[in-house]
Length: 236
Image (cartoon, rainbow, N blue to C red; front, side, top):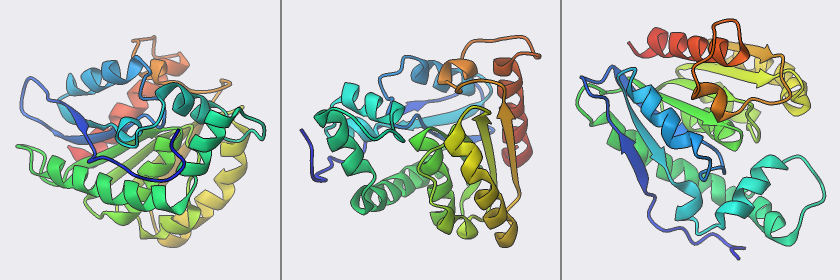
């Protein structure tokens, strides 16, 4: 059980495109690193000619992966078992945020040195990874696009420091995302950050929506196509 922050050096899984890179992506699946869709999504993005780095935040912190995944799922709930409560206490604390920013900025630096990437970098995050995507973009001007899916844990006070663009895709039934959107949109507007948000008619979004090819009219198909359009707009 981890109750205090004693991280190991941050590891990251690297997936390179077969042809020259059009840009680089830091992919943050939140606390669901065990989700089998994560490597599939990294390879699908690489097939679009992006070099993808997937930082292993959960394992670098020594967290139990099952408890971490459960914590992601019940982020806004009050009652959890002890293992989930310990994870939530850790990742909602300031030490985690400070460590994550330092570690992920180092990942951005490594990505920027890859052939063909330079500073054409996006951070894509899901759940808590979505909140981190906005945080990293606010801390690192090399990030041209922060793209969040069903984000939680967004620090709205930081968005005024974002130098690139920001996008939020979320499920219409995601009450927390819907309730925070007016404040988030207002903060982006005050800071002059190009920002767009789109709700989807679903109970929640999932990484699977970005992995399995679907018709354009479906939630998954539209989400994938809009994501690619944002990457092309800001990186290519």
